[in-house]
Image (cartoon, rainbow, N blue to C red; front, top):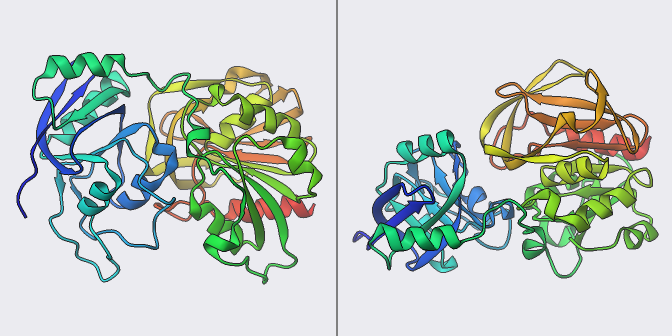
Length: 379
């Protein structure tokens, strides 16, 4: 396989990386972030939460086991660009149906390889996530840098609607019927703010039937259908800019059991009267340690977020906050940096986590949360 054309990656602080393109050619802009996972590149590429972002993989070899038709988290590649040290020339797995290179080319997404991803990751850790551009058309840093700085940043960006479905659908049409072994099935509405398919798979495994609805679906319409619960999904962008999601969450709290995941956790926090903030470089990877204050158990978790709920956004006593909907236990903490990772409402039926209990990719330590959601609906 011949090497791709020269490609240039430029960060908004002027740092530049010269490599070779793989996948598509052209020019793309987004927020540069890094992911520390050693596996799971297909799930990363197709996770709608990465919309508008150029993802640099810290692990040097990507594409080794190819891609397939079973593992995508959505219908297409969602990242704005993909940066790796080396992309595999061929796939080595019996499950592979195509290659990383072919998937990016078909999606029209630019990949860049042959760059020092360690240097890029360290730069993002030191300076924080920042805007960047990848180009196969521009070989000079300064012109590309000017266009990078003209590109809007992630703060104040409402991206959830752009990746949400336009029409509602039954999850069974995508992941099959819900498991009947746990007991009677529960019916939930899933707000698609950038939904991963693995969330639907875990709901089905817990005996929960799901109907996926668009991001701007009014809460009264959901409540009128008599669902047993509502799930607020993951998704991209600034939660504070996703005002329709905050409004829906606010009108659902106390009316029906709610589970929030990632962006859904942040929207729930805002609906409870709290606040969110943009992290320096976020959490993206498969090995974040999170402690559940109730059990003392430490879970190794999968993450993908650049914003977080501020635990000081409410008046609180220790880890119990006084919110617009009563007491809320600030239930989970990241052991690396203390970030708030989960909440349990004590006076209304609602729980949320910042991380991804469905994993995909990642460890399965947190799958119990789908059972906990089921129990919340059955209480």
